[in-house]
Image 1 (cartoon, rainbow, N blue to C red):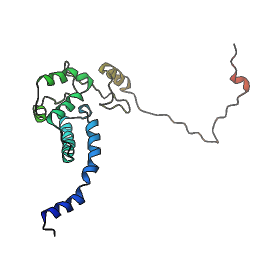
Image 2: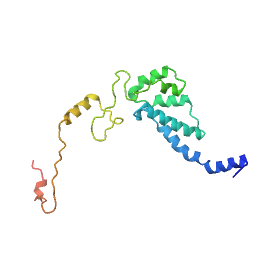
Image 3: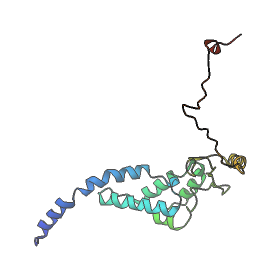
Image 4: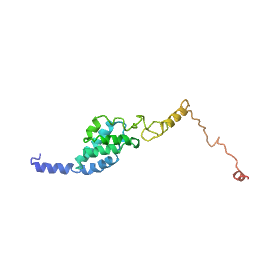
Length: 177
């Protein structure tokens, strides 16, 4: 039981003061690598940016609304440059205004002119919505080509007893001209 406020503060600082040194590098890394285009929804992005900003503020590295707006707009997908410029022209001063207007909903998945997805799940192994940037007409062709095909794989069991052993001669490796 500590009654002196200064002594209590010093004890708390000694016990918990290192958290800032531990949390700051990861928060700075997360801030640097935060990209709006990497999120499936605006809600997920909004939650993540506020979490990072809270940690940065706790660590005495305040982030302004202007910096949050800039981070958001500069990390749009390259196909949304026009949309990025339109948001800049609106001159948002508060990050929450930008988010709460619902103006960003889906902007990381839409082109400003057509309103169609710029990323499609083509169906190929390892091609996810954020990494596969295949044009829609090619995706449609690929999906049509695999549609209806069964995924039967043929396997042949080979062991030493039934392994075919070809008999090769040195002459098999020469090409006749």
